Length: 188
Image (cartoon, rainbow, N blue to C red):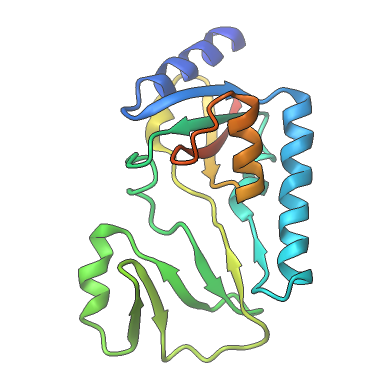
């Protein structure tokens, strides 16, 4: 398959995901704007005295040849199959806390060394913290492109709130209940 055919097929696959409202391949301008917004969000988390964060998922997406943003309805299952969407780690990479998928919630509730906050976030009491903690938005599995001829190194991530707002504005879907997600891949 040629590059253009692969890109069209990726679009078909993404469009066929239930609850996806729309998607768009990033233009160079959108790419620059999102990178700037993500860097600013990371910097502001430090400057404003809140727990710093690193958006590893978005940075991994930008290491790929092609990126696309997806706008989805609020109850979309794209993210629910992911192992983790947010973690709190220390400077040595020890996981202090993390978001729990539906599949892991009941299992983690049974552990005595876990404190559940809200419905879906675990803090691990027995982890000895080294250095300052920070939030990590990790790479997120994106199995929807598996098996697609010519597509490799697929990954995805959750954008920060400023980038989310920017994407919805550019794509003219500013309804705040919609969520955005970003995926990246290489072509063989």
